[in-house]
Length: 167
Image (cartoon, rainbow, N blue to C red; front, side, top):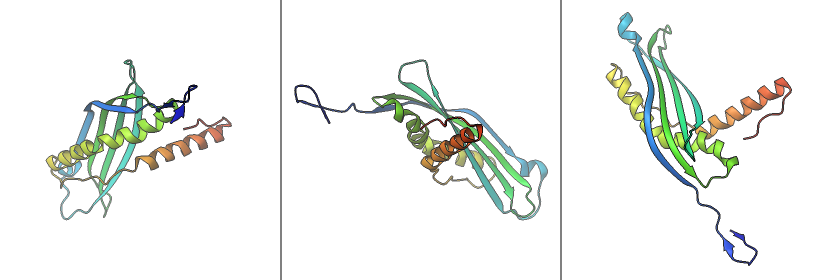
């Protein structure tokens, strides 16, 4: 708490966050195994790539966070593709009382963390409905993703001789 001129305690602003809506922006699932008709046993090797894209909306204090997943499954023996799932899942958030310097990490860590259980369910349902055992995604470490992105930007800026943007 901070003190005002008359010595009274002043409370720090409370952060308010509401999820206004969540929705699938784009979804694509290809069952390559069924199209090609691979015979025999297959042992899937699954690769998950995650990208996050935050956007300011026109309305005051509203932000959209898009989580982009690309899930590629190949047979461990031979490397034949089994399926490809691409998903863009979006959430619209109302965020108030958050200092500007904390907004970027909040959008790239807390918002995707709130959406993750819904995204996991969609992936599970789509893979099951596509003819495969349901793929239950492991938890995604959004803090590590954020730190990796900041490190990548700093390395890119250093290579270009520019000052790196701060988080």
